[in-house]
Length: 311
Image (cartoon, rainbow, N blue to C red; front, side, top):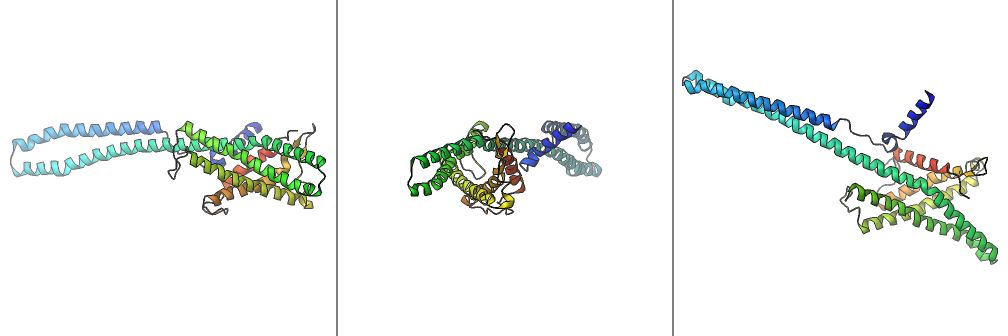
């Protein structure tokens, strides 16, 4: 029961409704279309029975010319006949509405599924990028150490750490947007999506080059805020323990110390993207960060913090 409850809780925490703030439309399109077919059958039956009744009713005014027959003819054609016709039309309209609603459900749910799949792939890329960025950081730090050993110029020694950090920011920001652009491009190609909500061609070189530039700038902001937050935490006694990695019995280190800095950096990343799009970046605004987006960041960077550092 405990395992089942835990699995259910995990499933709920990772459901599209919770993770992306969306929910699929209710309703079974196939059953709705079956209902539409039944409504058409009802309308057909109404028309058929009225035609049969009309053939009998015609005999009244065809065989008699008195006032009563004329009044009956007017009632039949102007009142009763029109009422039956309108009933048939309304039933057919209801059938067409059912088919249209079934189409809406399928279309909306398809796009929701596409959105969730796309967002999941982007999240997985961000999580999987952790070992890449750590190896990149290690390579730059080793190069810095070698240069410090081989060079004794005080200005080089003074400036090299800053230059190494800048090199990491730039290199990391050149690499990470590759996935941010390649994944949507591949997904849009496979899913047959040609334009976004504004009508822009999502497969064009200009569109993807702009996306790459925007993500490059946002990633530089991410690194700056993340490193700045980590530096502040290391110098505040109460936060030092939170900035330190957790060492496992086998000697591997979990990247837990980067969780808070990365959350701060990720927030800066999204806000920088908003600014480049001309949107208000402030959380709580119409175009700013939402609770669902912050929850996604928590999942991504919480997961990344549990990935052991590769030596």
